[in-house]
Amino acid sequence: MNFEYTEEQIMAQQSARDLAQREFILDVIERDTNCIFPEKHVKKLAELGFLGMQVDPEYDGTGMDTISYVLALEEISKVDSSLGVIMSVNNSLVAWEIQEYGTEEQKEKFLKPLARGEKIGAFLLSEPEAGSDATMQRTTAIDKGDHYLVNGVKNWITNGNSAGTYVVIAQTDPEKGHKGINALIVDRHSEGISLGQHEDKMGMRSSDTHSVMFTDVKVPKENRIGEDGFGFKLAMKTLEGGRLGIAAQALGLASGAYELALKYAQERKAFGKEIIKHQAIAFKLADMATEIEAMRFLCLKAAWLKDNKQPYGTASAMAKLYCAETAMKITTEAVQIFGGYGYVKEYHVERLMRDAKLTQIYEGTSEIQKIVISRAISSL
Ligand code: CAA
Image 1 (cartoon, helix red, strand yellow):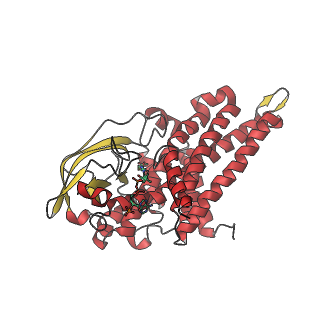
Image 2: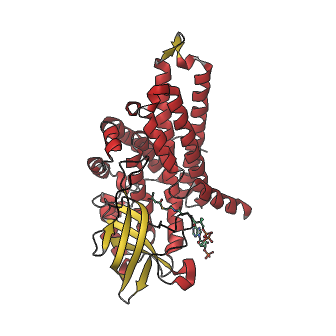
């Protein structure tokens, strides 16, 4: 077992850290308060190759491994997890599945602009009545010979407005259940697509979240990813990588909150000494540091399995479950260490706590991760 990072992994971590600490930090509170999409920061992520981190250089990506991806996502999410989720959805939920299962034409047409960050991607699985129960797709993609006709509503779509490329999961043959579902690449500006209002969320407020309505949207047949009826399995496989991205994001939220709380505890005095010298605070920080190590190891193990072409779905569900739950706990403790200051925006930790809540919900709630894990361990 080797606990050392490669030079490339350190470089990815360092350049993400520099970018986040130097630039993204400057307007993060304003963007959170006013729900401002971080357009210029997304461009910067694109310029430095973070939006196509795992895309092969042949398709204009940076071709890095999953460990580098986890390290970079942690650093970005420490400062701004809205940027973390934009980066994660583009890489894990959209670019990955086109690279893995797309045709050569789809890679040329859709993957390259995603990898260059000229267009960003969105993954449209959830519906008003199909959240956790994802096989219950009501959006239809009716086979019309040379094209599909798409009708329906998708909910909670990250990058819903800002994306140029959607991957839409829809039901072609309801009689076949999940085996009648397809995944289609759809141009966001196609005729018949309209957006619901921007969701005014508790956290991750500068990432845009919308519902998306489809009314007789024509999608060319050649935009289907994989065989007819492969859409649900493709979505599930895609979420294995997506969940690791969210685990890394939760790791960033926790380590960001911990670093701020540690510094504050070393400076703030109460009862005649720095508060870190009070055992009540020191023990909280000791727990946080230990739990962050455990979070990181779970993420790196899942990343290593993926890089080594071994099954990683259970490891990524475990990473997501533990990291999301622990991020909620650690960010809450960070607010507690800051006391009254923690409850106001200026000190960042309240935002990290609000953001952490979403990691327990999206890309499969913690309860869904327990379903995935318990099914895997019961079949061993
Ligand atoms: N890889 C490949 N195939 C898989 C798979 C995987 N990881 N998981 C399941 N499948 C296959 C099964 O083998 C089965 O196929 P067969 O019938 O041929 O055997 C088929 O898919 C159906 O699987 P299940 O019977 O297990 O289906 P289920 O109804 O019991 O549901 C579930 C399983 C795990 C609960 C699933 O519905 C699920 O993951 N739900 C949560 C959905 C989710 O994560 N949504 C997040 C939305 S995306 C998002 O949040 C993005 C964003 O913007 C940030």
